[in-house]
Image (tube, rainbow, N blue to C red; front, side, top):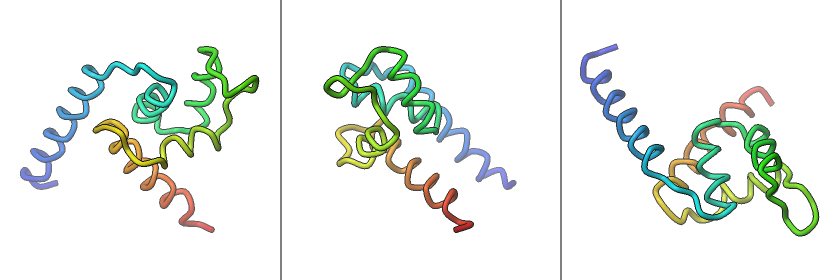
Length: 97
């Protein structure tokens, strides 16, 4: 790795840490985005949100619900990051199909 690449990576990680530490989710959607940026797994986000008691109507959340939240038009910087990560993860995961 070149020094310039390492510097860019450090800057990216510092910005990531700043965003995570300063973000306070106030809605279920924001909580889903916030958790996805940290966990990078829709399944794990669904499990966490369901543990916290979030529901859509009378039913528990599903991976489709969370995926739809992440794919929606970004509302803030955290959501933009989550959507980029989601798109990247989807491409990586479908590479073998």
